Length: 98
Image 1 (spheres, rainbow, N blue to C red):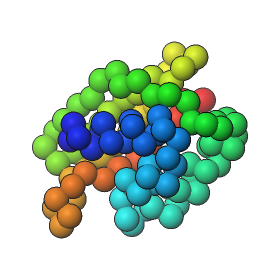
Image 2 (cartoon, helix red, strand yellow):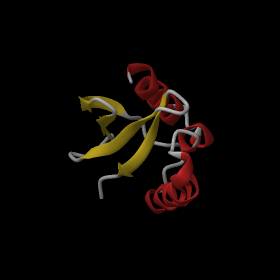
Image 3 (cartoon, rainbow, N blue to C red):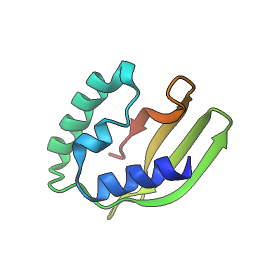
Image 4 (cartoon, rainbow, N blue to C red):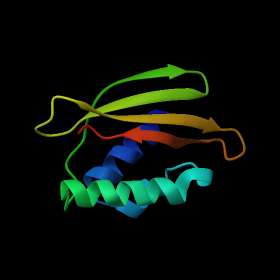
């Protein structure tokens, strides 16, 4: 999980949106990608704001990771599941603070 979260943070902080979208679970990648595009436009995140990891929880095949966004007291939330078929972690939910 550590490597996946670091890859996510690095992709996000480098403004590599397509790499971030590739981390979404395949079955929800299209809808999550559209949601992320809308959020980026709404917040006018060009480039994406830098994320700083704050904490996470691990529960076997499920993990939640929280990141701090600059200028926000609320945290960016990501939820991850372990995909046994690919033997890797995929993002299955994210929430951006309003």
